[in-house]
Amino acid sequence: MDGPTSPALRVCVPTHLEMVRPVRRILESLLASEGWSEDDVADVGLVATEILQNAVEHGSRNDGHEAVEVRCEIFGREVVIEVSDPGTGKGVDSLLLQDPERPPPEDSSRGRGLYLVQRIARRMDRLRAPHGGSLLRVRMAPEGGA
Image 1 (cartoon, rainbow, N blue to C red):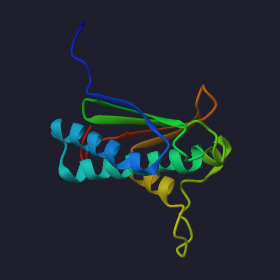
Image 2 (image 1 turned 90 degrees about the horizontal axis):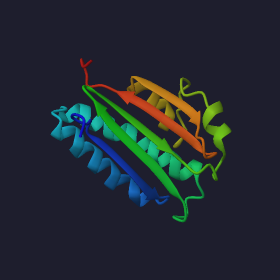
Image 3 (image 1 turned 45 degrees about the vertical axis):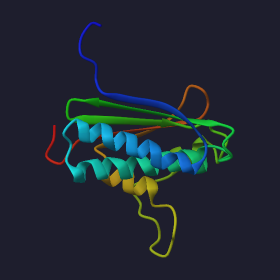
């Protein structure tokens, strides 16, 4: 080894919504072990849940026959989460063209995911993944953190 490595999580999970909670729990445990507060861990968990659910529900066929890739890495007092989907759902453009700054209608029961992520995360990037799907990358830091 050349030196200390950053704590990280890398996993490919089947495109089933049942996979969201276990990934969230692992990420939350990783952050807690690094000294993040309960509130900050909960915020990151919420963001991770939203982007992973979106990848499964909208970026895939949501049938378990594909995979969503999740990468999380802690750099000092910042966590970077990347989720890439296979792109077989609504298509990459549906993610790229959505305005995450605009709140959904109050009477809508859906459509709050990216809006919440945009409001909570320090930064959110929506990209075309090299394999043809979409990639959502968020950066978060603890309240009052770096």
